[in-house]
Image (cartoon, rainbow, N blue to C red; front, side):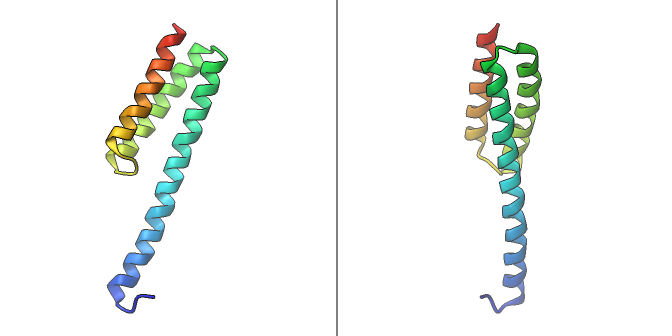
Length: 87
């Protein structure tokens, strides 16, 4: 356990940030699963709506360094490719 006051504060802040990042990553995964389910059902309208929402959240997470920019680009690209196949 840390003895220095600033180190104790950093531990607390890190716990909060870790929980926040975990929550954001979980939300992204859930949106991707919902999108994939819509694609599986060939529901283009719902898939397009979910794609827009998921892409926005993924890009935001990449901006905040929750996930890497390359990982975000890969996820959005795969979703866009799946959406375009529905056409």
